[in-house]
Length: 158
Image (cartoon, rainbow, N blue to C red; front, side, top):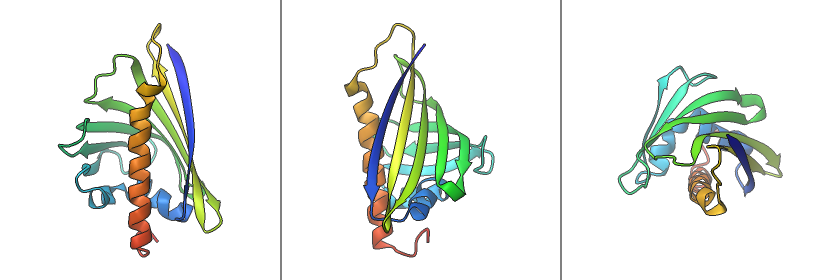
């Protein structure tokens, strides 16, 4: 099995504490932020800390119905989370799992989100850029929707 790593940085006008809280600590608000895209976010095992398993259920218009992620590391004070997609309704013909690391770093009054994705690929399979693009686009779309919502609602996740 090989590992393909992809990194990206996204800047935001929102403080790192609010982005981290909205996306990781209070992720149950995501259906309110993206009502057509996300139906629910719930912990099916654990209380939200390390070892917990979170299931996200997506709307009918999405190409994916659900994902289950296991939280591998969660550091609220440094705005860092590492999690592994352990199950999904998408059939991975090339990928065994995806490990995500996300860190928010203060930048002025906003932040920079540094994300690294490790795609654990089946042996003898090649993962192409277009294979990764769909997941990258979904993550960016969600990030921007959360950012817009937090700017419009300054008391949320404050």
